[in-house]
Amino acid sequence: MIAALLLSFGVIFVAELGDKSQLMAMTYALRYKWWIVLLAITVATTAVHAVSVFFGHFLGLSIPSNVMSIVAGIAMLIFGLWTLRGDSLDDAEQGKADRVGKSVFFAVMSSFFLAELGDKTMLATITLSAHSNWLGVWIGSTIGMVAADALAIAIGALLGKHLPERTIAIGASVLFFAFAAWLLFEGLRDSSSVTVIATLSAVVVLAGVGSYYIHRVHRAAALAATAPAAEPAHSGHASDQQ
Image (cartoon, rainbow, N blue to C red; front, side):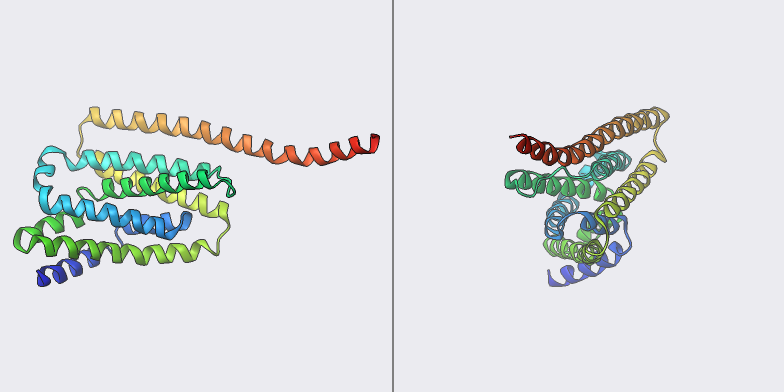
């Protein structure tokens, strides 16, 4: 078991370096609290490697990897639009803060889970578990991937402290859109024309609706920012009249 753990740790750690999920981890850490990102990635990694070790070959037969890539790509597109919109979060409202924290956790966890299904690290874990102790492979592969992503999270967190908030949001959105294009290309490369047309149509609709919604949110925020400036002058004038 120890030998399988060490072997799988080394293989997955090296395989994860420079992988898209490591870049995703850094991008999330630019925008959100590092511990939420790390916890979400740990949960997703534990789950996807459990799938790899126990049910990977059955899942691979029932759900084509290109379908999972398409779903993950659409998820990245949605998260990119969400990031570009910005958070309408009042720091004084603890209830809202809790809800936003939970939504970020589940968004990061689900996007990582989808992105890793059919990825090279999942395939490597399946291969290792076929010839080594399954528990050692599960633990070692999970620790190896979390360790590699933790490095990326540390870099993202450090960069996030030295960049303006809006710059971070725009940069993160661009990276999410790039991940979406990457995953969609992988999924559509060998798909049928019907799948390609349906997927691209969904992408166009999501982009259009998302852009319209983002425009409305930013316009409302701009109006709200200018409204309080007029009130003090008005109340002061009223007090003078009294």
